[in-house]
Length: 287
Length: 322
Image (cartoon, chains in turn brown, green):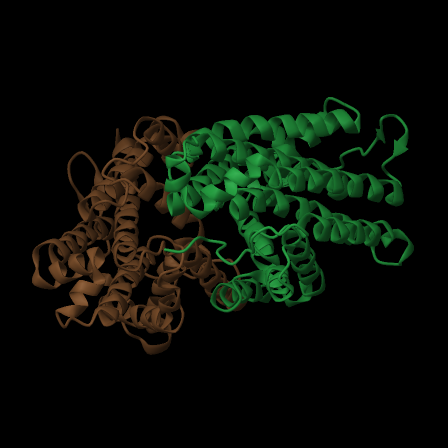
C-alpha cells in the first residue's frame, strides 16, 4: 500500500506540471492562436534560471520562484515582439514550426554548455524533511509542489474567468478588432499574455528543479506528454486543462503501480481511446 | 486565415512538360554520381530522406496536413525490414515488402485516429502517436532497445544483384527513390491529387461540392505513410542497422525542416531540402550541438522570411510550378 500512495503522489506531482504547462499553452493558444512548441524549452529555462540565481547570485529558492518566471516571461515577450507577431493571419502551423525552431535553438545552446547530464538543485531548508501522515510518509517539498501549483492554477483561472482584465482578454480572443475599437491595446495584451503563459512554464520549471535534476532536455520529452494531455482535454476551457492535467498525472501514477511497463505510454493510449469516442476531446469545442 | 501553401502557382499547360524535363535532368545527375567521385553513401542516405520528405510533402503540401510524427513510419518499416532480413533470413525484396506492409497497416490505424482532428490538433496527435510507438520500440524485445538491430545482411536482390557492392546498392536505392518519386508525381497530377489540393485551399468548399474530404485525407495519409515506410526499408540497406533515432520525434522534426527548406507543396523542393540538410549534418558534424542550433535557426529564418522554400522561391521567380 505504501508503494501505491507513493506512486499516487508522484502522479499528482507530474499532474501539477502537466496542469501548469497545459494551462500556459491554453492561455497562449487562446490569444495568439499558436501552439507554443517552445513551451518545454522555456520550462527548462525556468529551472536553469533558478539554478543560476542560486549558484551565481546566491539568490534562494523563494526569490527564484518569483524572479525566474519574470526573467523567462520577459524573454518570451521579446520573442513575441520580434518573431511571433509577424505570423498573425498566417496558418497556425507556421506558429508551430517557428516555435519548434526556437525550442531547438534554446535547447541546443544549453546542451552545448551543460551537456545532457543534470545539475543538482537542493531543496530549500524550510521544505526539507517529511511528515508522517499515518498511512504514508509525505516529503514536505512534494506536498508543497502539489498545493502551490494548485493555487497558481486556480489563481490563473480566477484572473481569466472572473476579473475585468480576463474579460478583456476573452473578448480580444473572440474579436480583436472590436476590442481595439474600444481603446484597448490588443497587441500589448497579446504580448503580456504570451509572457504570462511562458511565466507559468518557467514557474513549473523552478518547482521541478529540486525534484528532477536541471537538464537541457528536461522539457523536450515532457512537452509531448503535455500535448497529449491537451488533445485529451481539448483546449476549450482553462478549468479543463487544469483538471485534465492533474487527472492524467494520477492515472499515470496508478499505472506505474499496477502495470509499470505501460506507464510511459498510458497517456498516449488514453489519447487514442478518447479520440475514438469523442474526437473533440473531453472539454473541447470543435476545432 | 490563409492556406498553408498559399503561394503555389496554378498549374499551367506547360507545367507537366517543365516538371518532366527537371525530372529527367535530376535522374541523369543522380545516375552519374558513381562516376563523379562523390561519396555514394552520402547520396544514398540523402536519397532515402528525400523519398521520406517527398512522402511527407504529399500530405502537407497537397493535403494541408502537417504530420509531426512521420518518423514512426520510417522507423517501423525499418525495424520490420531489419527483423525480416536478419531473423527470418528473407531476401531483400521480401524484406522491403514486409517493411512497407507494416507501414501500410500502421498508417491505416494512425490515420483513422488522427484524421478526425484538424490543424494543430492533427499535428499534436501524430506527434503523440509516434512518441507512443517510440516507447513501445524502446521496450519491445525484438528491437533490442537502445542497441537497435545491428549487422543486417544486405543479401542479393532477386537473387541476382549483390547489394553488398556499393555501386549495385546505389543503383537499387536510386531506382527505389525514382519509382517512389514518380508515384508521388503521378498521384499529385491525378484527379485525386486535384481534389486534395482543393481541400488544402478550402475544405468547406470541397465539402459543399460533395467530396467526402475525410476519405481523401485518409487515403493521402495512408499513401504518404506507406511511401515513408518504403524510404525506411531502403534506408536499412544503406545504414545496415535500425535504431531508435529513426523513430524519435526529432527525426519527424528533421523531415519537416527538409520539406520547409526545399519548399512546401513543390515537387522537387523536398529532394533539394533533404540533400541540403543531410549535407549540413555531414559537414557540420564537428560542431556538436551547434548543429541543432543551426537547424533551429533555419526553421526560424524559413518561417519568418522565405516561407516558399528554395525551390518555391525559384518557381515563383520563374513563374513555373516545380
